[in-house]
Image (cartoon, rainbow, N blue to C red):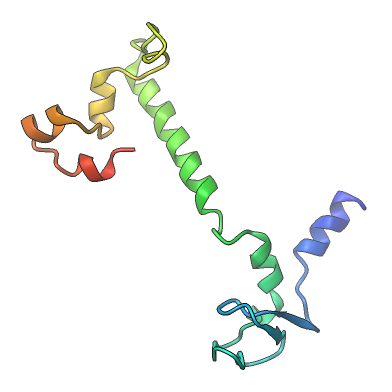
Length: 124
């Protein structure tokens, strides 16, 4: 089976048959107006339910969060300039303190001395 056939099979709209209701997981017809189990309107999502299910239950949330964390890490390294930690195992490739503070580092100094209480909730 070629890659093109796999992509066409995954992203093809289903027009006949049955799919799982997106709300309760019961088998319903693609053209059904309501799920007979939970009452959800258009449980087959116009035949696109298998396509959406192929994206995963998290709808890409986990890769988005990981990608965002990597991007913010790279930005803190760029903000550090040439002052990146290279000593010891625990500080290897770490951003400097100014860049960490700029990007929302948490700890006693930012919270109590600078009043940045939200960093406790937002620091990654």
